[in-house]
Amino acid sequence: MAEETSPTGAVTDKSVGNGQPLLRLRDISKHFGAVQALYGVDLDLPSGQVTALCGDNGAGKSVLTKTIAGIHQPDTGQMIWEGREVHIRTPGDAAALGIETVYQDLALADNLDIVQNMFLGRERLSGLLLNEDSMEQAAKETLSGLHVTTVRSIRQPVATLSGGQRQAVAVAKAVMWNSKLVMLDEPTAALGVAQTRMVLDLIKRLKDHGLAVMVISHNLNDVFEAADRVAVLHLGRMVAQDAISAFDRQSVVDFLTTGGSAREVGGSSAVA
Ligand SMILES: Nc1ncnc2c1ncn2[C@@H]1O[C@H](COP(=O)(O)OP(=O)(O)OP(=O)(O)O)[C@@H](O)[C@H]1O
Ligand SMILES: [Mg+2]
Image 1 (tube, rainbow, N blue to C red):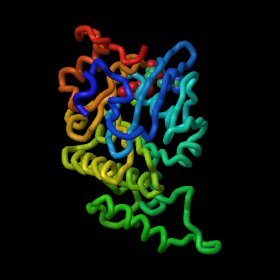
Image 2 (cartoon, rainbow, N blue to C red; image 1 turned 180 degrees about the horizontal axis):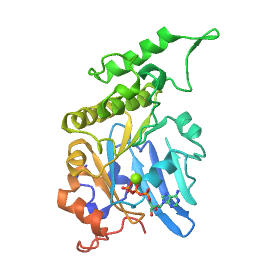
Image 3 (tube, protein in one colour; image 1 turned 45 degrees about the vertical axis):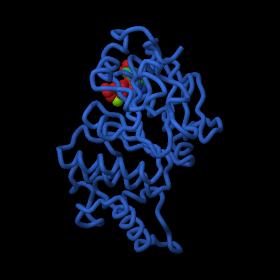
C-alpha cells in the first residue's frame, strides 16, 4: 500500500488499499459558535485495519470522533457506511450501525462489577429476572477471546481494576456488541508500560477480528507499533492520510506541528 501516495498526497481512495472502507467521511465541517473545529474533513476507516488519528491539542480529534459517534452533528458533509450514506444523529444510531467508542474517561460505572458494566443498559433477561449466568458466560468468553487474562474475577467492581484492565473491559464491552468500528480516544495516555502493551495487543486483536479500529494517540511509539494507516489533523483540517509505511516519525511530527507547510511542494493540504 505504500506505493500509492506520498504522505503529502494524502486523501485519495487509493490510499485505502483493496476494498471500500467501512466508513468514509467526506467534507465534514463542524463549528461551535465562533470556533470552527473541523474544516471539510475527509477520512476513510477500512475494516481489518488500525487507523491512528493524530493531531496536536485542539486539532479536532475528539470532535471528529464524537461526530462519528453521534454526539455532534456535522454542519456539512457526508458519512458513507458500507457504501451507503447514513445520518448518525444519536449515540443510539451509531450503536445500531456497529460503532462503539471507548472514551478516555471510559464511562464505566465504578460501583458495578465487570459483567454489570458490560451489559449496562442491555441486560439479558430470563422472564422477569436478569439472566446472570448467561451474561457472566458471555462476558467471560469475550474477555478470554481477547486474551484478557489478568482480571481475577469478572464479579470484581470496576473500581478495583487497574487502568489497563479498565481499558480492556471497555474494549471487551465494545467487541461483545458485534461492533464493526471501534474508536478509542487516547487509550494508553494514563497507562504504564505493561498496561500499554496489553492495550496495544488488544487493538491488534480487534483488527485481526476484522474490525475497523480508529485510535487517537499522541504517542508516536504507539502509532508506529499499532497503526496500519495514519491520519493527521492540524487546526481542524486533515493534512495527511496514508499507509503508515508512507510516513516516518519526522514527517508525522511535521504534519502535527505545522500541518506540513514546512515540507516541499506536492500539496500539504489533503483537502481542497
Ligand atoms: N463542545 C464544544 N464547544 C465549543 N468548542 C468546542 C467544543 N468541543 C470542542 N471545541 C473546540 O473545538 C476544537 C477542537 O477540540 P477537540 O476537543 O476536538 O481537540 P482534540 O484534538 O481532541 O485535542 P486534545 O488532544 O487536547 O484532546 C478546540 O478548539 C475546542 O476548543
Ligand atoms: Mg481530545
